[in-house]
Image (cartoon, rainbow, N blue to C red):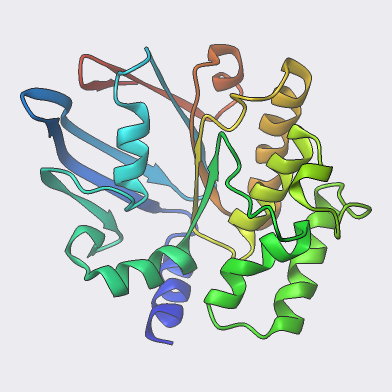
Length: 235
């Protein structure tokens, strides 16, 4: 309940402001410095693409911003809340309520239907089964999957599976959606449609999107493009 209130407070106060700030992020694996003193600000209702060569640290940065990994040093702030200082339990609660994730390989549970996969984060957040199902159905309808609600992942195309994962990311109305190579397994038509969909969803649900992608042409559809090179962030 505390984190639900915190999330609402942050969302209202950042509607036209910075949602997330990273300050002096450094990340190394052994002697290899992957991220070298990176700072950035992500604003409300903004779509930002992160590009760079393979192995440049794009996904590492995304995972740190999304609290899935921790930096060696630096801060990740949602307003004045440094999420790197939260306990694992509180961080998991905050992540569930305030963040959504879309991955290249979907990570849908194979034994669950499309609507059941989308419901899961809402159920974890404490919503009733009826409310979670209603919200999941509405999202899937918005994403053109009204006739696929009861289909399991193996019964869906790659593009349809990715739309289910997008619906799952949005079910709790997060401040920020993190997408890691979301079009990596899609053909060019479905990839373009997904990026256009992100723009439509940003306008409707008022969430910000940060997208890691190798596709420079698709990245240009975003509001802003950041590039990682030699551990540094270029804009």
